[in-house]
Length: 249
Image (cartoon, rainbow, N blue to C red):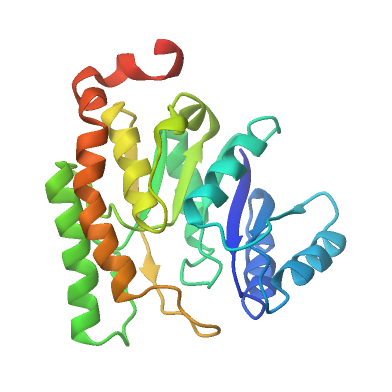
């Protein structure tokens, strides 16, 4: 299966070369699309250098500024619909998502429409060095979102995902409104409402070693509030299910 890994970046100069090297060491048919939001630390220039080092395998989308996670992924999806890729992976640039897990996810996608890299199923875990409060906050945020939305999925807030192209093509992506990290919850809930088959593969979520985290309490608080908006926005799709897919397929 031909997979394109989408990597949104903002100030990930230290991490991007390590991640690209690790991905291309996997026994998979991979291409990479870097979506850089005009990183002040030169991540975009490094991405261009990687595109030259791996011709035909790395491409770069340069954006004018920090436009957000949701628009980065949505623009990438639409760009890639016209390529030969059969599946799209969502992956953080900070190497917190272990590249090796993508092998198991690629195997699982053969029988699913979407596969999640899950921290909260047997075999999955978060960074061993995280303090108790941080582990509790992560677990609570995930529990909160999946309980409100009624999804029988263990990890609804994680960002490590593998989609079949036809799954995304059948989704009304124009209805996605969220910005920031709650976009991940909204996109997953949309797939769930449309009754796509969703699988989970255990992953170890490591803390970043280089660079600065983008997560903050403000982002988490905004996400908690927006979960209710997601529930309201897709109430019609939850009732209609499969028939609500683009083209009614």
